[in-house]
Length: 122
Image (cartoon, rainbow, N blue to C red; front, top):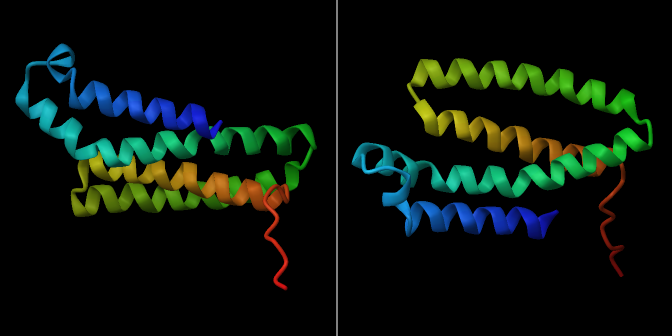
């Protein structure tokens, strides 16, 4: 999943960076696309692992942890939406929220499923 996510990020950056005139000729749109590219790339890199870890938890029927986490995540998304509107964060704020959603899912699900085990200190 990480290699697929990285490939998608490289393709997105290439399309926006090199083939931008094929996407649109509107400079305002292109400027916005360049501005949010780091947020988009981060979200795309985190989405794949989050979905994979979630699938493992579902296969193991660890639904309690998923339910608690999604309840917490819903509250944080509401806070993000308020902040986006209140501070006028626009499209960058929306993508930042999505990075939070994907990143927090990847971290929480890897912990809930004990999928990442730190090495013991010697």
